[in-house]
Amino acid sequence: MKLHYSTRLGELYQADCLALLHSIPSGTVDTFFADPPFNLKKDYGSQGSDNIPDSDYLKWCEAWLAEGVRVLTAGGAFFTYNLPKWLMPQGTFLSSIPGMTFKHWIAVDKAHSLPITNRLSTSHYGMLYFIKGDKPRVFDRDAVRIPIQVCRHCGRDVKDYGGHKKFLNPKGLNLSDVWDDIPPVRHKRYKNRPANQLAPVILERVIRLTTKPNDLVCDPFAGAGTTAYVAEKLGRRWITGEINDPEPTRLRLEEIANGTDPGWRSSKKRIMTQSASHVCEPSGSLFADASL
Ligand SMILES: C[S@@+](CC[C@H](N)C(=O)[O-])C[C@H]1O[C@@H](n2cnc3c(N)ncnc32)[C@H](O)[C@@H]1O
Image 1 (tube, rainbow, N blue to C red):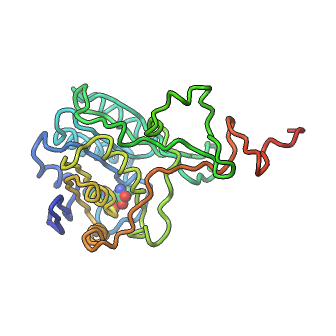
Image 2: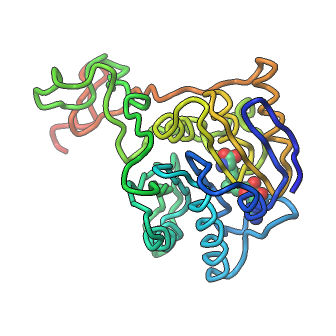
Image 3: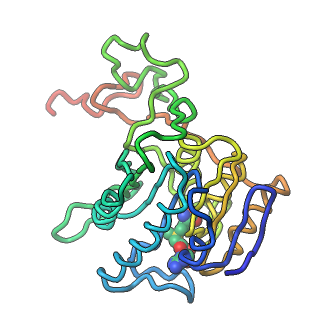
């Protein structure tokens, strides 16, 4: 385990996830976030395999999940991002750890899903959200409100609030457990390495919802460093490790230091299509044909 880069707020290690976690004292991390390899035969570099027997994968996950729980502070938030297939056993495992409380299964909608023989198309990733104990130390719903959604064609509300719009919080809608407004990270200005990386807005929500400035966020699978990047931008302390090349994370953090990082768009969802509760008149309607 080798320190690769640090800032006033955080430390980036080239490290195996377990070595990194073993080095962290118990009860010191305010929010733990993990986006591990999904055992889908992806090539992340020469270290670590993404193609191992299912039972070995689950055993490996249980080892770092348990360590993630150990390092978490009382009331701290625990997030793990994966395919539903792996989140089911991981959720059962986390629930079996005394004191861990399930909060949510967050569905993160995928922009595209491919047809798969004899299966429904997989259209979401999942994120388990647990807390250590039964009371969250931070749950700042106001920090992650969603702007009220307006049709970009006609400017009217997309959602039908059933006459209750006046009771809505003017700061925005409550964040729900379905996140269907997450943009894929494709453009080369925003993509820091060829392998997959998460949209910063996912980490923005995780961090704003569950931490205060200067709290400590830990991510043992840095990848392109999205967690460290967002934590640094939001003034949270962070610790992260990557078993393969940590350079994409360092470069991203250096962009913050130089003032050249591209930032990201927080949720500003503007619905462009029709929905069951909104039919846009000026541009015509999907349902305009009376024969439908
Ligand atoms: C899905 S990616 C994380 C992407 C990251 N969330 C982002 O937004 O850029 C998983 C990363 O875990 C790394 N990895 C695999 N095995 C590891 C291990 N044992 N310890 C630490 N990192 C590991 C892989 O090299 C890969 O970069």
